[in-house]
Length: 96
Image (cartoon, rainbow, N blue to C red; front, side, top):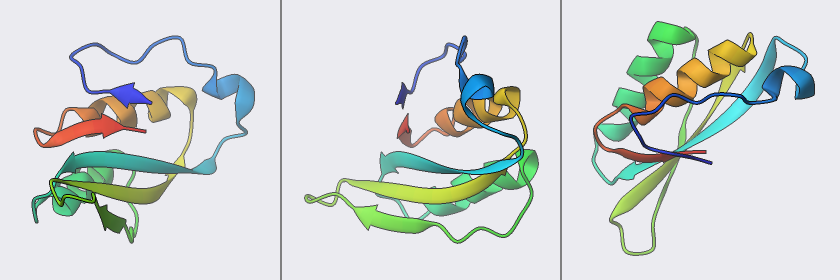
């Protein structure tokens, strides 16, 4: 889990664990706003263009939404870039 911070994700072992390119599911938790899925897709289209069909689940109190989306990643650096860019969305709280 990557908590939203201003620091970059570093020293991961994705390159040792995965064969690229591959599909990776990202779960993004953010404020329950209608714009959340669109903002996520906008970032993904910049860094990993494709057709996305995110699934959205509201929290029990309806304050947050969990958005899950599968993305084709091409390298360790690509994964880290996506974690950072998704985490930089103003209404995102966590990227898993």
